[in-house]
Image (cartoon, rainbow, N blue to C red; front, side, top):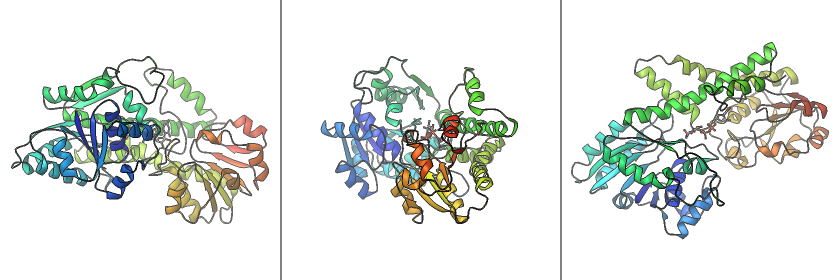
Length: 448
Ligand code: UGA
């Protein structure tokens, strides 16, 4: 099928690349000409495992192209996937202006039948507004629009794997024809019949993904409900970790046993310095704002948000207790991204942490395998260096992101070069017993 993807961010590039990889002909468009030039030259502007290879292979086969010409791309595509950003407004609600503007262009430029797929994360009832905008602004075009909500459940870092092997594909539709067309688009994935870029030796055996057809409103709610629930789980684990610290207990033992109950499940119970990224915090905020506007009290989620906001303060309190005065102390940060295997620092706990440490007069060095250049733009006063230089003469080292490579550091060398061998592990990445054996003063989250 001929598919147009509007927006070349994380979601757009993964969606476009993967749909091309399973056999469709995809045009990805973006209104940033620099991005298009870079993509045309084969540069993928984000770090996402497998994505570069997937896109390179599809370009070679002529199944994907990049363009700044939105009107032509709209005319060509039988299905148009809207993957533009919906960043948070001051009041927490999602900014839908990019969707609105794209909708008006689609309406004006389209001829004939078009399946318009809302892939960006949006509040419930956006589909209705989108449909109305398409009809109102497209009244002279003679086009016929079918609107579909098709939320993405991709995690950064494993987005290609998640797209190719989803647990479920949710489509919110108004009629049977739209459900059928969406089934066709996803058929290779639903039937597990495609050449998998993630598993060149063959995919591991597993169940086929569920194909769930719902109303548009339900589908939009599903996305927010999932991310908010994940956030709730993390905040729950983080408060439990505080309890473990105060009353004696080990959060890892507690959550491990909890996770063995299939009604709870083992995932998203890892305690730490809180959730970040461009999805969980913003979706949680948007869902709370949406509920408030609808007259529903979702203070349960507000509390999850409050717990999360407080994580950095709690982490800092531990650092202050150990270092006494922060002014003039040299503190090293290992990890800047909001989680491992991504280059994304948006709403990363590191940002708040750096800001507060600088405000208290600490002198900072930092290392991250993927995000030093980006972070330098916001914090030029931090010195960026390799992990050993970050540790050199430091009064304390903070583990901020759970990059695997930190486990493999020569920790004896780190210990010897530090002014004081003091480590605060905000991700429970290292083994407390081993760290103490090595002679570190070591503190983590919710572990004795
Ligand atoms: C999240 C969801 O997991 C995806 O399903 C969803 O599609 C995506 O948002 C989206 O809406 O686009 P992502 O933001 O990539 O994916 O990251 P997660 O893996 O969910 O992690 C979010 C944050 O929670 C990270 O800061 C991570 O370190 C933290 N986290 C995660 C914990 O603190 N504890 C956990 O147990 C799990």
